[in-house]
Image 1 (cartoon, one colour):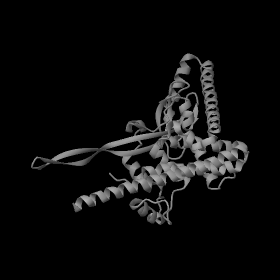
Image 2: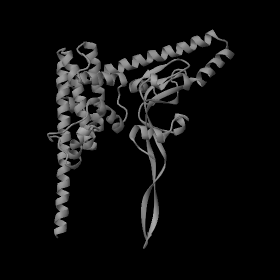
Image 3: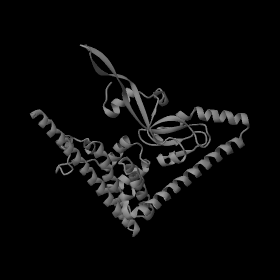
Image 4: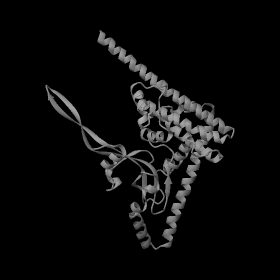
Length: 348
């Protein structure tokens, strides 16, 4: 009986802990909604400096709600002075912990990328958002504030979807929802127009090349450009720490290069061993490696098409979400064991 009571008490404690975590996550969502409401109110009265300052705060709080729901320790920075925060959130998650230290926006966005998939902003947009949030960039111009607000709304849309809002996203924005729809529609139109222009220019370049050469020389030139694409297109030109894989160019339909961030993990299987008396024990066996690519950019060495960021990739119907690739796709220079050790401190 005493054991049953103890088990029931543990169950009640676990339920209470989950409820407390849910309430803490909900408070972060509410806080994000208030910051975004203030940013949108400022937009309505042309207070552009306030718009640029407050919208990234909404992203930060909503992003922390996503990390908190997955696991509260994900909001803790990887710093020695944050050890007390780590221990506190791992044992008794509480946003009110007086010594709580949490990640800044830059680290938050990186963690969200790994948790929810690719965010709909490129490296430059992300840097701009972080610098404005941290006060490192002066903001206040109408166009600049509009772009920052649109980027923040795009990220919030992905985060709200991950939190299960779905068609109820309007509830997060309240009376400002019609403005949000117009701003996001304008953003999609701008991206669509930009990509359409890029595709047209790329096709025109290829047409111009074909008209300036005879068929045989044109074929040889194109073949040489395709063959040299891996060496000619440097991933570092499109972002720090990126790797490239082959992908069909949406403009000329020839081989181009898709660049993105790489994540690797052990491919773990389980083996079973008899321990006698008809019982078996299982243990993990490390196999090969699984590799994921989160696309960030595309370039073609033939027609010179370049696309930056998930939005342009989506518009051009190229992969933009995190997806599995083969080790062979990354070429002979990629060593998954060395990569895992350098990136995560993982040793085989």
